[in-house]
Image (cartoon, rainbow over all chains, first blue to last red; front, side, top):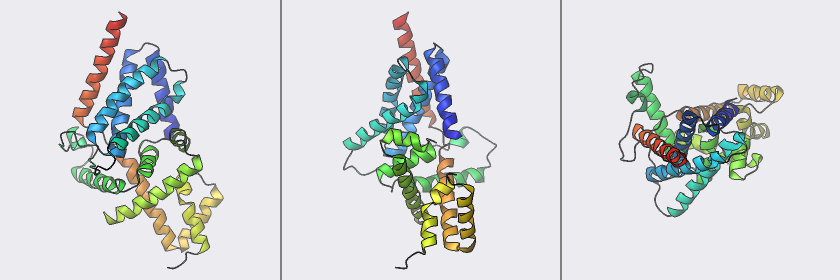
Length: 195
Length: 87
């Protein structure tokens, strides 16, 4: 399964990194930062905050990994700390208008065409254009969801976490996570029909 | 407002579990049979399946290259700094 596969992958990286493998440590820290940036941007919508959360996750992950006793629990730990950092950022920005940008957009506001930049000729240009439009519609729909629902959609659908992992991270029951995810999907569907 | 039939309400309540593969064969078959004769529920199932698919496709979008570069640089600086401390 996707979620248990990713969890095992993280755990293996953690074991190699703590065993003194510098390349594994580099990969682990890069993945932690990527996760932190993507999650923060999708949930909060502020690229400056996303970079801050990314930096925090680098130091936190490095310190945590040196003393980790259960590599299997690393992924849940990572999302818990990233979620908490996002909540702090959101509290500080309470009252400000949401300024959502896309995950493909840089801090300076320059929009990238990810696959075009990577020169991936395996994807025809018309298909890429359709994908960009779909992602734009999804972003617009996602930002209209209540924050706690948006977080669950991001964790479950986009980050591939299991219901149990989301329950552990958020402190909600698994039944509650499922109920919120279902409601969020219904809301997203309605928004997608109108945006 | 029109009240939904009981059968439709039961189907709508379990659509997410159906899409996530959490239902047994009998329950899946009941949903599929119901959708075969109820266009309204069939539309909801199709719509939610598309929504979930859209979210999962969006998950593969890579980070901006400039952000990735800064992240890589931070990792190298941290590890170089730490290895100097221990050597």
